[in-house]
Image (spheres, helix red, strand yellow):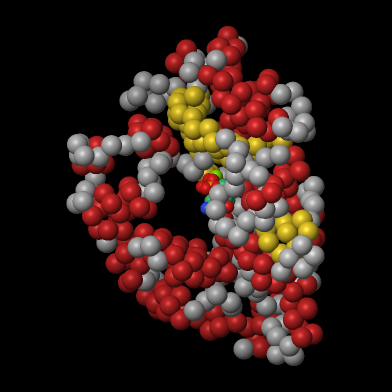
Length: 410
Ligand code: DCT
Ligand code: MG
């Protein structure tokens, strides 16, 4: 056991200094039996999780179990498996023995049983069973369509539908606008977006944003800001220095996309004629943000900022899609425009990962008596909002070591 701990401490220190952990320290004083400083925190926001996952064989398995439970509506148990996977992702090396899981938080008996079987047989029979399960496979297929969530997928499954063909030829099913676009561009959208494509999109978005408001700035957020090479979409956050501009900028950008951008880029031969109408789908959601309604207790709810969900035509770099006879692909893009004084909180939420954000909010509430969401940080003890200009300010308010975006891949 001592050997395990020392191996772990050493590997934790390799390359990077181990940050002192304020909460562990605080607890060490209060409880003599508290975990040592080298222990892994139960909170993702106290772990540094890069994309370098040394335990993929285990985390992939645990995430299949989590996803299956999500499909069954069992969100609590699903979260337990997601947390277990996330802890393993933060480790500096691959697990070597099942016993090593004993000193790790969030790894319950179910997760440990899966890990044990993988150690012994190379795979988990439960995971194999799920991967072959008709309900899981159908739910996975249906929910991979833009605009189709678990509820709709389940509904279609219980009506006996198993394939896209069956869904699309079922007369009683009326797809909404989002789902129609989801099916129309399914092949393109289900292909991951590369970093190169994300950078090309940034140029397109920046062009439109700066044209409608020269003082506004655009930053990539979401998975790409955490260093991912591929994503299911590209997320952008827009900063507008003048008060009120955040409410008008997105409709203006959408209008711009619909008209001038593509004409000018066409003239510059950046776009082909086929690409003239680059906006394939847009869903603008007006801001419902109201400072007086804060603090909110609905932590998991999406934020109230002005945002839009788009499908944009992106010109392909080299090869042309011969079958479709086109030199572009459809890409999912999200834009969010918070008010300036809310920018840091919005950026922190949108940078993700989802589990990292969830644990930041849980840590704030349970360990610090503060309420955090994408809009604000509220101190329950003093009944005040804590102002922040940067993400660093928010970590400091929470007494947390700053974690860089590329270390938030929990
Ligand atoms: N987010 C969140 N809660 C959710 C979903 C998302 O807080 N339920 C935040 C975290 C990430 C950010 O919004 C962007 O969402 P996604 O694009 O879904 O996530 P991603 O990390 O960018 O993943 P991908 O690379 O697949 O796009
Ligand atoms: Mg994303």
